[in-house]
Length: 479
Image (cartoon, rainbow, N blue to C red; front, side, top):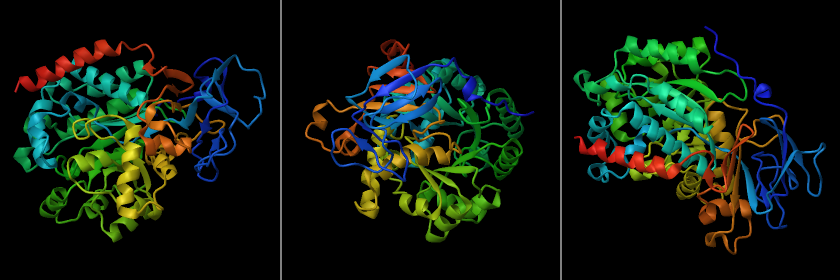
């Protein structure tokens, strides 16, 4: 069956909105410079759009030069003189369901393998309503951080949660977050030498049949797609070799992206050597995954040759700095991977290994952590913002996202600088990271406001948080 095609131009009636005279604009264009209306230093990342951005229906229609006006009349004009305007941030790796197990005492001070083994039995009790609440909270937190597109790696399908992808798509559609939902999988349980308990793994035939089902039902092809499906066997220590091979073959046949965890810890490297007789990248190649449709979560423990091979193949990497620090997994070689040809993006990772879902905070973490490895001159605020926008979009195979340009989807994030932390700052774009922006004032996805005045449109967040918190307490108490 052919995947449905998404036509961004048919997404709604013609409506022109002028986001007028922003304090600063960072378009994400690596060849240009951002515009600072205060006349201060400029951070690289755009052309002269000092007069703002015009949105028509679901797309960016034009960039207005300094002192200029739109080429046509606009039905709505939004005063953005107090805002820094960015492309919507793009999150390349998350586990939405894990918002239910943040800062859980038994795993606060553990490394990855022990962390997983203690949490698997808790996660195995998640109900469809629990998942709906978890997705709502994660998506709301992402939107409030300026994120407009998120990839969620859902690989947990216990008996009561076999339609998890359906729950995710329905919930995300209500909130309006653009998404790449990944039909993850675990087929290698503890009885077969894997890490997860048998209650959390599925038969390989069941996995592949459901992959076909969710692709047929939800995957949209083409620019501007609001929902895409990728295939995402969880990790070398939780899926069989054959599941990796079958997933790669289905992805090629259906034009889908592939995602998995790889080289997150040295324990994983040891597991691959013992079980497969291969290092992680050799294993990736042996199952047909070393290609540009693949993006990897974490990608920390690569040697020089592996960095070069991944770059030559055009593999993407989701850098998850907070999670990597939280679990003491290591520091990804993000600059070298990008220089070698990899698409490097950012991921907040699961909200039990971070323990938040704030992508703007994650961009700051990436800036600071990567400077420890490469020095201040090699990692500018613009480079870190590039990872959070166009780099992440490229990792997901979404070249239509991550920049502000005519004809691109109108996914935009606007931040105010009127908090005490920004007082005395000079470069408004750099200040977002150096001074610690953490909450967007307005967020637009596909031409529609999804956050206004710092609140998610149409969501009773206090009520959701109350029910979500109760579900989280019940989940851990049941064990």
